[in-house]
Length: 225
Length: 301
Image 1 (tube, rainbow over the protein chains, first blue to last red):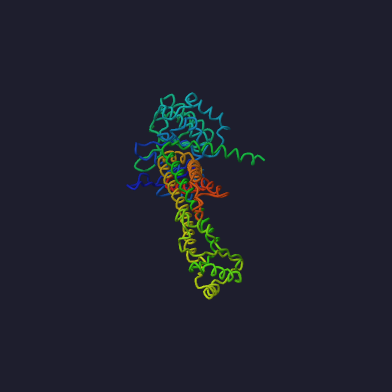
Image 2: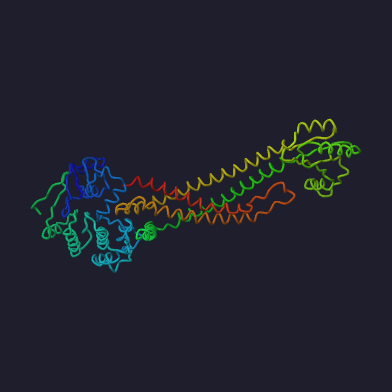
């Protein structure tokens, strides 16, 4: 669904990623690891089209990103759920409205999805915090809310940047099991993390591939985990 | 059927969600409101000015064009005879509908604004005036002048063109100045709203970023801002227009002595004209914000 072919990315001060290729197929489950600053977030940004590759081709749902207009990118993003490292909420709206925001911006009825939203809030354990503003939530609560927002549109691909960075192990396992569940429904998952425990736990539940960014290149990490 | 039902429902829903995605901003909102109100207030006056000068130009050209004056300068004992002779000439001239000797009372009334009511007319060597009204076909003023010169040496025909033309020209110029002012006010308001919208877009860069990331199309984001600024501009312009109209309504009326001039203000159905100002303000705000927002969004991913 998202395909990178010999992609390079250059910030202007040298290449951060070189000749990277990856195919996020339906039902695939990938972890992305690597030291801080190696380019994990940049890699994800290339996937959700916030950055454009300086070389190579990125395809999203069969279309070349280079040839996509702004509206095409907006529509493609509705099929990609992203959990950002810093969550990215609208700080003046209560968390329940933030979670429902993808529905609102794509013109879907939030009232028709009220039950869904309710279930989702319940699942991420934020039902009682629905009317709180993002600033009033703890780091872990914000992370859970970000995941809820990423999946509310039932996207085909879910990209997560350190989704368990701020949550305890119990919550990490719950987040993971939701992602595994979504993966079993055929969705492609890509998680950037350096939480090795999370990767090990996931490997016992799904057939996950672990990728590592090293020296600007993407490598398949093997049994060393 | 479902389609038709869903359209208003859809509009209500999306407009509701767009309304809330941009955080409320007290200060810039008030500045926009104030600017729109001030501009609308000025626009009311510019409109009143161009209306009044338009009326003036029409009136002067219409009233003065059809009338002329014959002035008879003669020694006191000859004046009656000469007046009679002139009247005879006028009555036999083709194209003159009416000729009327202006009496002492009327002359006194005409001079009163300048010399006061107690003017001893008899003591002054005033010329005799005859008002001439032409008919539809009009008369040959050169021919009339020659005949008058032959019959009564003291009679001079003044057909007003000499001073009517510059007056009408001045009034016309005044009307175009009023219209130019309205155009300038409109453009300035557009510029101010575009600046305010730009400031709001910059202040809400994070909101726009988040909306783009979760799949909002530019049109959705633009609508949120356009809606806000259009409503503010219309609201401000309504207040400004109302204040402007009240001020114009309470302007002191021009006195009958200056009846030759015209009151600055609106007459009859022209009172509806300023009501178009809030509408225009809304249109200007709509396009200015739209233009600013789309321009700004192109710089983001």
